[in-house]
Length: 248
Ligand code: BJW
Ligand code: ZN
Image (cartoon, rainbow, N blue to C red; front, side):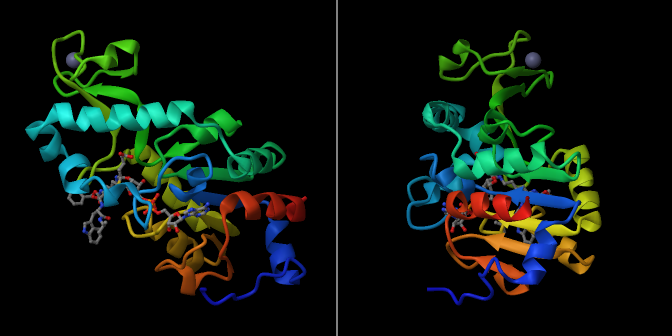
């Protein structure tokens, strides 16, 4: 078991932090695990069965677009059948009552935050429900036509999932806004991320360097655990509703 640091909600420092008006939350695959969507890394992670270098980079797509599309269709099916969980809902409620003082940044491409009611979600790694044309750059929401082995654009070009693969730049505006929010917030929540994929993994530490209280929620320790002011080594769906209550 990872060492517990300060888990009591009675801690006045935690109470004070939760009452803050400028809260930023970064989520990763772990928040959707309780909706039945596999994470990437870890014992049950997708990378145990699928090799990222074969699936999550542009060269892999060029070499075998059919295989990559098959993988994304498999994931779309899983995500489409999933429902937002208590963790997603708690974050949506937190934002709903925060009068603009709560911002959500996600590495997830599954759209479950939006389905739970979160708005203005900053998506750092794109969205699995969108396609982008390799030839003309046109974007479109996925359609039933995506059942084709490799979906085609109106211009005839191959479509790819509009997500960010290894070695690709993150959406510039989303990343720039995330850095500003991390520098300016009073509390930074890092939820369900292994905190190993850059540049997203820098955000919690950037916030901390600029004076924010860093709260991490993850059943397992991560490279940023030692920098956190408060660690909750438990599932997000258990912890977030409790923090939401305490923040009221
Ligand atoms: C729970 C839970 C529960 C379980 N409750 N928690 C060296 C230094 C710096 C950077 C690099 C470097 N070498 C290479 C790089 C760059 C690279 C990188 O960071 N690589 C590292 C892996 C080393 N980064 C990039 O390439 C990025 N681009 C970039 O840097 O551009 C500049 C550049 C340009 C040209 C050349 C080089 C650089 C792009 C990264 C794109 C990541 N894409 C993916 C796929 C998205 C599409 C898709 O979904 O298919 O994004 S990879 C995958 O990892 C996905 C995720 O968003 C991302 C992060 O994963 P996440 O969310 O943290 O999930 P897991 O599975 O890792 O962790 C889940 C956690 O949940 C675990 O900790 C569990 O314990 C926990 N958990 N149940 C709470 N109930
Ligand atoms: Zn096109």
